Image (tube, rainbow, N blue to C red; front, side):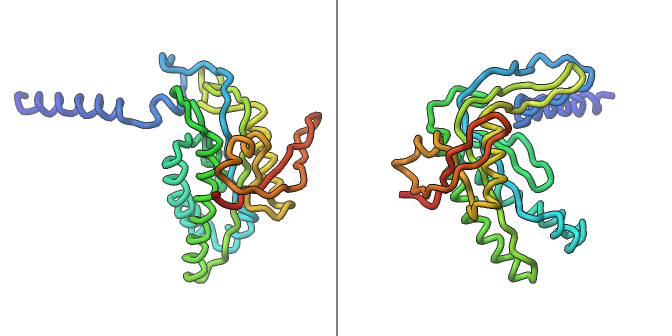
Length: 232
């Protein structure tokens, strides 16, 4: 019994340390029947939203097989995730080949130019995708095209859901615009599309080309669209 007491104390200390160091503890809250005192009430924020997706990944998955496709996705995310974090992006969701993240004062006060952070992340992600594609072709695999939509604007950020289950996420105009821009890359021959607000906040830092406006969700005006093509 005397031997077990120090072991038990050590386990408790380890659990406490893990609780405080777990990065998702206050960021992505999923609850089942447990009241969570750390729930984050939804609030309006000015943020920059980034959606990334891979072109025609389902046919590629069928061609490669599910196991090889899963390895490819893991390799893709292992490349992209550090880039987003390096630019202070908050990853809300990995869903199959779709990536949803936000930049700005998501969980703490921030005075940084979150549009700049997002667009710098986009350019780095594109460079990393080129290198990843070189590795894929060297292994006899097809190249994969990534498309990205970026929108700066208002969103409601916080816990969305019920008492049984909720998720820390963002909803609103900026999220909708980023989704539409990401989809439009496929028909606009663009690697990324950026809305006017994100471009306006980074004009002194990034070169853009004007692209045909992107159709918005029903009832909204078309989205002015620009492709970020490099740093100044």
